[in-house]
Length: 179
Image (tube, rainbow, N blue to C red):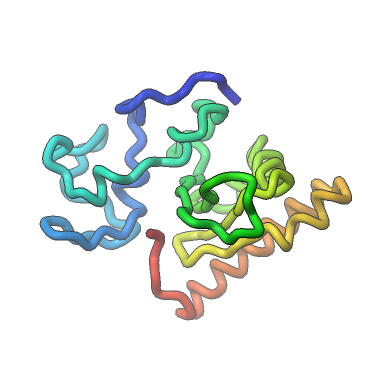
């Protein structure tokens, strides 16, 4: 983890949000998983006039000062979305965080992922997991494992929840993409 705050415009070559967010707004309609036609590989071709939805989007990686460059979504396989108004019982922060796993199991197994999710859960921050699917609040599933110091159990539970998301999507049980 790094102590440097990611400055605006510091996304580098990352355009994960331009591909994985579902956008339905005046002037722009694109489905999740499809690269926006305004994206030119290193950013937005209409940045100055981009839609309000895009203008208001903030990548969790850029908002959390302690996350280093290896957490950038195109490198980590995880896009972190801010969740406004999390459940009241998770009062450790004003917002919650949805960890959208786009890079498969390796994204969950990468160094630091389980530890960071565990830290947030232990601090009563609302933590969600999704995989291009509706998000699942995972605190109650992880808290007993974290309290017991069972890191392997936390990893196993995260993988289990991730696989449930994949199975639900494959079976057509979920239709709403990330938002």
